[in-house]
Image 1 (cartoon, rainbow, N blue to C red):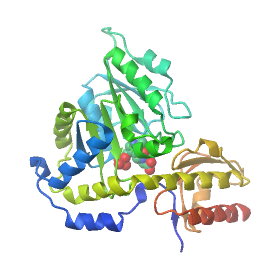
Image 2: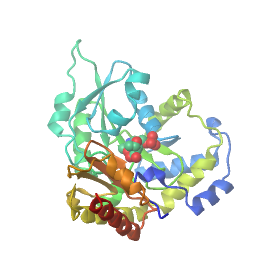
Image 3: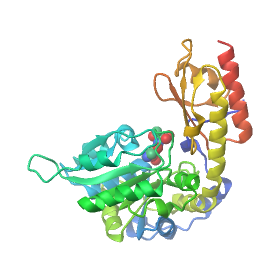
Length: 346
Ligand code: TLP
């Protein structure tokens, strides 16, 4: 059966070039700093993001947690959006493992957090309050329609952080999608950030891995924290090799994913019983609502999956589709046909 898997871009399997690079990778013990392929990936990633140094980690979740643990101590606070991945989907690791207090402020539909709300959430020096150490942003913002946050906004947050002498972390799991969508370099979006995590294993297609970038001093501390979390992975050049291919060969094609997402959104907007504003779709993530009383967001994916189309239910009436490099423009037409067929047959 034809499969169009739109559940996430995390489902992407390594390309033939990645598999070849993995097989041929030169490796060493990375805990001794002796894996040449890991070292090369880290140098490339740091250069790409305009930072001094970088650290290869197992996942986006690990990259965010390592960064939080470096920036904040027990009982200290960080400010983040209430729709952020770190707040919703990372098991509360900051408090569970670090004793770090999350202070949420509302995300706007475009993934930003109102600057006044950020400033108002920063604690004054008072014996009753935790100390605010960090602002965490997400770019692109997964739950806010995969919206890219532009350089002006990122800079404005950086200015606030600078004024209050606190740090900025960016969960840039899909930072390269943001850069492609906005037509800028990734480094332009994170110039004001003290740390950034970006993922190789989402739209860029690597099987495993994320990279944390920051100053040399920050990365030295992050390397120590990664070790205590069990993330010293020895001959991980085998994985880093696929990351190097991901970073060199895959970013430009993210534009295709964005075009396919927009095409899907426009098609869904024309289907009775579904609701979506295609204008909201700027990258590869498409959220839409089921509006028919005889259909639910649980039932629709079940019925679509018998047509080979896979997507995720993300709320009582809400569904999510994410384009990725296994999904062609032709697949989008096939998926739209499957939606029509399933909704017609009820
Ligand atoms: N997001 C996944 C799910 O966990 C929801 C997805 O399919 O979108 N930051 C952001 C902004 C993310 O979207 C994700 C993964 C992560 C961090 C975590 O990355 P991993 O899965 O590598 O730990």
